[in-house]
Length: 196
Image (cartoon, rainbow, N blue to C red; front, top):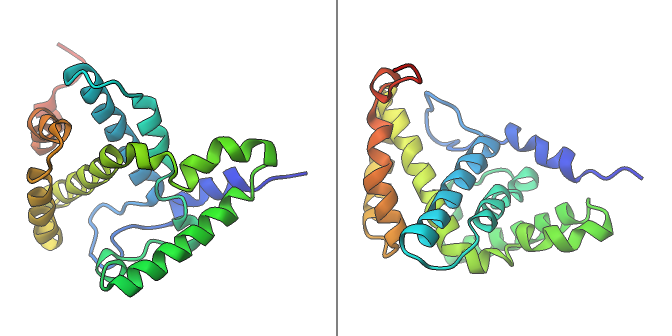
């Protein structure tokens, strides 16, 4: 019997983000999820190795890889609509839950237990703070990249997102902002190449 789960996951590349805004550099949820996973893993390593708080960075990365998987079936609802009211937020959460259950059902039964915590967000409860922060950092990086590409459409989003990140109580976020975000302002020549 054929199972559709990974064929669905592969379709993440067809779901665009930032649909209400003019994008110089279009982004889909597959690209976004990869970047969130990279950042979530980094935040986990920072938590473990800089702040000496035991955690599994790989778990953060796995949760981040699947954090938007329900959007394969629902699409990416723009943030201003998604959070417009508590009623819409609650209804969208219910739609997301249904999409997660349907997606999970496309796996063989013997694999569902391993993926259920990732798809349904059960593991995310433990990883929620860093995955949410990684999601926000990814959005901020997108805004920087759009500004640097000459697109003023993202200036307000960049300012708002930076304020949220600066107010974060997470020391891992402050560390990432201080040590890694400035490099996103550099050109490839400024970053340097592997040649010395």
